[in-house]
Amino acid sequence: MKKIIGLVLGMAIFGCQDNENAISEFTGNEVVYSLQQGGVYVINGTVSLKEKKDGSSVVTISLNGTEGDIQLPVHLHLGDISAPDAEVAALLNPVLGSTGKSETHLKRLANEELISFKDLIALEASIKIHLGESGPDRNVILAAGNIGTAGSTPNGRSGISVCRSE
Image 1: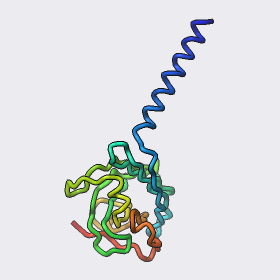
Image 2 (image 1 turned 90 degrees about the vertical axis):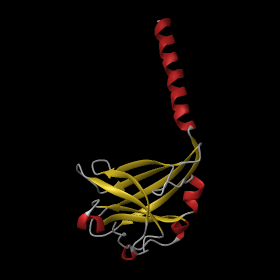
Image 3 (image 1 turned 45 degrees about the vertical axis):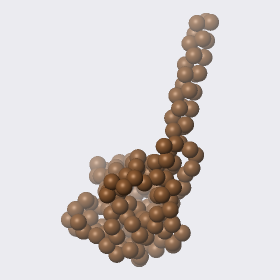
Image 4 (image 1 turned 180 degrees about the vertical axis):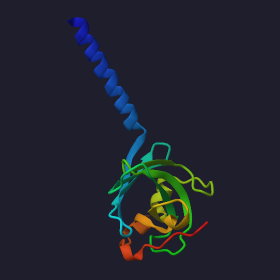
């Protein structure tokens, strides 16, 4: 019986240490923004930016209303959601339709410039989730929202512009 109790206590101690190490990679700084429906598809959610101890960010998208095996492209754009032909600052990992989730460890922009959490939340930017990576589906924005300094700009569905074609 003593061996079983010792084994259980040992597992509990090591299990707690693993959880503490996972939590410790973050500073505790986090900002969450709303993502609103972009058109006829009823899809909305949030984007959270969490600061890692190395100064980089983890960008997590959580959407409601997605389904299936589809992968939905996610872009970080310069300017707010109404900026026409907004430049793509970074391609983020796609949202999986089956889970509505995407997570990206963001250290660099598309132009290879380093971007820290502090730089990201000071950026006038937006997040747009597209129906497809190319063709006409690229112009269908399922959900979008302003982040950083643009995050204080009201998000209006009628004000969401399509992205620059590349």
